[in-house]
Figure 1 (tube, rainbow over the protein chains, first blue to last red):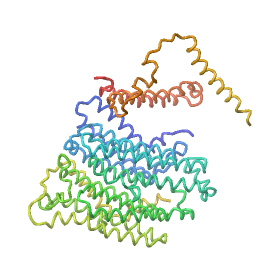
Figure 2 (cartoon, rainbow over the protein chains, first blue to last red; figure 1 turned 30 degrees about the vertical axis):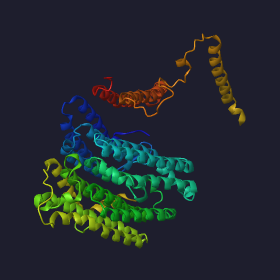
Figure 3 (cartoon, rainbow over the protein chains, first blue to last red; figure 1 turned 90 degrees about the horizontal axis):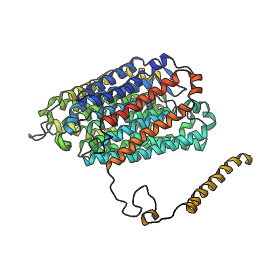
Figure 4 (tube, rainbow over the protein chains, first blue to last red; figure 1 turned 90 degrees about the vertical axis):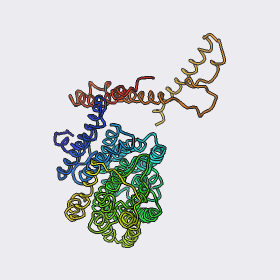
Length: 476
Length: 122
């Protein structure tokens, strides 16, 4: 197994981010105003890595003793993480100043978390999944508590750390059982031995524990309890990357671990479990979000229900379902980033302007922001011209193809419920009499980030066919 | 089958005999000048009996974290150094380069701690 130059070129996005972290540490050490340099530096890093990943999406290969795959869906995920993180860096510049946490380390931690997500997405071995998971989670624990003078932020970090470590325990225990039954951690070895172990109870329990552990990370219903508190307590820009990149990375790991099962009858064992997770997350998220008065909590519950919609695609066990979920993740990443981006722009000092009622009359006071927020709300609720609609469409179609029409019906009902709380925000912004409401000062860099997110949401909504075709060619 | 465990039993037996010999010989031959501090349980410098809700200065945590940096370095470098000759014969210069990359990454973290004043006690 000789390692060639081509191998290094294939993992260049990972190398770029890893080198970026080291250079950022040096900048942080020696530059006096590192917090001014590092956001732009990390944007360059993220953009070049993401662009290169999309550029080399066709060069699929398996590297380093079957530890890592590159090209195909892994590179699509790279693109999502890197562009998401670039937008988050844009949002963070003025947000950190406003929140009183104007430190350069924020961007180093952000890059480390993105590196972890990328390791999760291109893993071909359960050990790599574990390394990627830790590399992603530990910077997130720190970032959640980055606002160390605020009690909510500390609470978020501690809660996230304890429950996240608990979930990691499930994952490692599941890996242990899988290793015990198969005798290897490699996905390839699991695939070749799959015929022997697919009815083995130890193996099935191992995979189930693995799914449970990742249900924590994707915030599916019975394992969602940390989500509202952590999303509310963390700095808003951190919540933005945590709810999009973190979720997408966890889904990619779930697909890698379940890939031996797809197209096999033994997947039917997991279908009741996964569909229960999907139904409960969708309905719980949509219904509880209605009662929220805090916009970050509302978006947290909406993120739980979106995890449910995506789990429908996993439950179908078909290639079209996998492609649908990846499409959904692409759409969801940018619409949720945009929504949280606007929340972070409007947020005042000391956690003010975070109530839903603060958004009253925003349509009169700041038409641009209100218009952008409306786009994201329409997209999140799944109304047709925007990206969210096609995400839901592909996922529901895959459920019908696999003979679970009832799951698609529950999904449609749940998204009808969710329209209420998404559009309530739009109604509050445009159709309220009177003159109360906040009068925010808007930062230009954050506005740029949000506009880019909105453009991507609209583009995905306009050309869903070519994007799903690109994804489908790589999903076996 | 069972014979293969004989060396382990030998090691266990030797460990027990050695530990007992060490303890009892110091009791036999050493000078005995007891005082209350000496007779109390040794807890790494902390008082063995008292409230458990004592707050520890955050500086100690910093020291503990810096210790981990060195600890990890030693864990990786020792086996590498012991096997270096053989590894070098097999894989060539890449053995050296990969450890060098590891050390660069690692020393950067160390330098960061130093620059940020992690080694200043006050």
